[in-house]
Image (cartoon, rainbow, N blue to C red):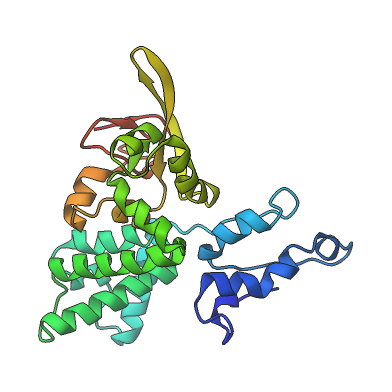
Length: 277
């Protein structure tokens, strides 16, 4: 079993260095497929963009460990209870507005690690603003989320130029032609080169076709990671972004969270095809 790759002195919480440490091993199919021996890798999700290019997903299968919303909340409640010696059982009671607590879970992408990172940032920001406050204020939470997204963006997209182009899209869902019109790049081939790393790492996916009058239909894309989706809209603050770009499916059996330009048009839920206005 291979674990804690990103916690070594040679990797230092760096996704590229972390992948280099194990790349020879993860690409050695003869070794990995020796009968009677099994290998299991627990890897940071930031390594996905490298493994998608260098590894062999058709031969070495990967699985995402997915937490549910309630599990993240339960984890936070238990941590707070332990650190407060049982005085506090509900973490969301420590927020002025309970919606701020929900945003922490939302922007963690249901990752326990990222959720804790955002919480650490919230505590730091609150101490800077008002150390005497007994609750976390809305603007403090939004500021913490903003800083976290900036930090997470550099981890997910390590190429600075590519990250700069992402921030120029100014859109959560788009077509290549729209990005050309918005002058993100000069032409369609240039745009394809820009978004190719995002689609390879599955940060961006095709969500359907946009039909045009008198012209060929074109693919529409949307960001799958809320941190990158937020960074793609630099003119919006956290509150406005959540209001106009995020929806949770209204079907109780589904409740899929997805990101689109809901301020421009409606989009069906990608899981159950229900229209969510």
